[in-house]
Image 1 (cartoon, rainbow, N blue to C red):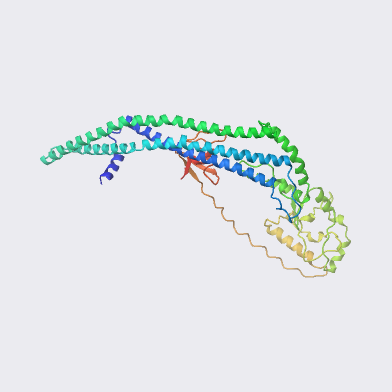
Image 2: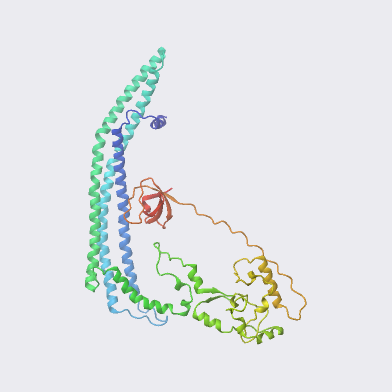
Length: 499
């Protein structure tokens, strides 16, 4: 019961024990504890990252060795034998694996010093300042008891015309107030004496810890540079490397001829992959292909996709081989010349629908031997201009154009000696309404620590800021893309926690 009353007292009472000087001391103590906790957590993550980096690089070099030096006899009976790798490249691969194996041993020994020089001293310092938290809590309880007794005594003192019983209660309340004040003053004086040296000692330990981190980082980078520089000097690689423009020019000189030979293959030249850009986005995904580039290289016909260009023009010039006619009444159409049905209209002729936009007739066959199709029968003299417009097979035609096209199409199927007509085809039902796209709810994180951008594109934030996630990866030990106050940028995900 007393603990519950003290909890309410912490919320409502702000008495003389909560002055500015003690508040500053308590805030400094919490800051020191928080800084030590951050150093411990980040140092552990840093140590694990270095260990993963060293192991991954050695594993990559081991895979190179397996590719360049395959197992003897592994390809027997599976096609042609594998070509032997040149001795120079094979020797370079073996030497690189030896360098990375020795480098891993040295780096792991240096990585272990992170635990001894940074993490363990920070843990010991945090354990040393932890008992003072009990003293702070004890002093806070004494303050609440003192303020409660003080309020009770003041309430009785302000009451006019006190009875003898109330006078006795007032005297008792004043005694309790004096006793609580004495106990609180003892706890307060003890905290004022012991807390400042502890806070100062904790803050004085932080610069040596950070200096140890910098020293270990420099030693790790020095080991890397020494090993790789020696490898480059022994095997004739440039160290330091040439400028990036020169590297890109050399790579393009070797890559472009091969790219041209591969893209000249017919199945690749007619595909979509050739139209994709070579560059990738910042997140590793391919840039989208514009619909315009695809439409310029392909057009839809009644039988499929035909690539545009000189080859398609040559193919269009050839007569198309069609099916055997099943109706003798259509034989008269074979005597007509192909020039009458050219897709390009003359200035004096009326507009005619191109051949490739008309539907293919699979029920009534045409002439044998590749004669052109007579499209004049499918055009009605009373057709509207909309019916002569190229149709889009993926859009719903209008009612008038549908009726006219259906009627004209039906009339082309009737023999010349027929007297009746086919009934008009029922229009298709309207497409069902599209479902509303489900929108993914926005994700937010709260910054646990302050972060200042270190380069262009970084997102700076303060502790407690709510950041909207624009793009994230599968782990929080990475850089995510977020939005804060209208600005977007990259930020470390491990500095935040989800809402």
